[in-house]
Amino acid sequence: MDKDKQIKYWLTGAEHDWETAGDIYDSGKNFHFCLFLCHLVIEKLLKALAVKAINDFPPKTHNLLRLAELAGLQITPDDIKLLEELNKFQMDTRYPDEKFTLYKMATLEFTTERILKIEMFRKWLISQILK
Image 1 (cartoon, one colour):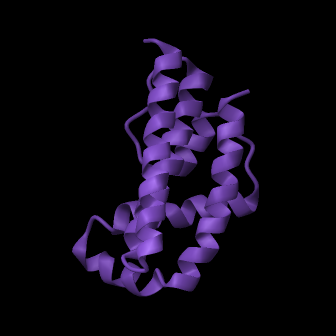
Image 2 (tube, one colour; image 1 turned 90 degrees about the horizontal axis):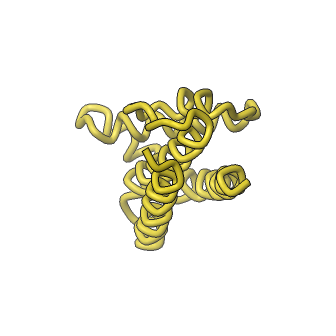
């Protein structure tokens, strides 16, 4: 495994998904998919950090808390809450019964608040990758 290539792969994917999440947010609709993509952004950044920490391919999991643990990150209780919340959008947007709850939850106000937190966390993760 080429560690640097793997890290670049996850960083590139995260950047693309972040741009797409922004496009969806700017459209003013489908905020649940915007938050789903935000989950993917954080997942990919955490996988880059996991590669850096374990010098191996990251596990095939979508659980952000597990990935943060594997990456050896010291995160705050607020970060844990954010990751738990994003985990819901990863899982629940895939299953029709759960989607309707998220449609209602993912309002402009809710999504805007989360995007600001996600942006700060995203920048911090990138700074950890680039160390």
